[in-house]
Length: 95
Image 1 (cartoon, rainbow, N blue to C red):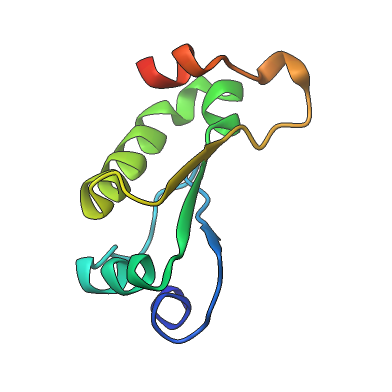
Image 2: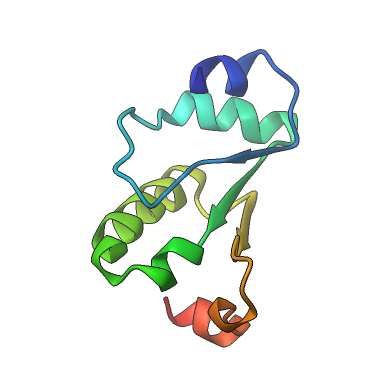
């Protein structure tokens, strides 16, 4: 499904759940095609803040995506419904 979305379907934002281990490979060719089409990738840090036990999985998944995209076309959002879990931009940069 990820390959189909990156190559054939015209979407603006792809949001991947980073709180669980990604069970597919992020291939550079697929990501590059999506970026060339103008697709952005959303990183929701809400689960990272709520559940500390998922921290290592979240960080490894985000690093994998950031490495493949080289930091281009990334959107960082909270994805939380409670204002207490929101973080300042400075907190996000230190993560």
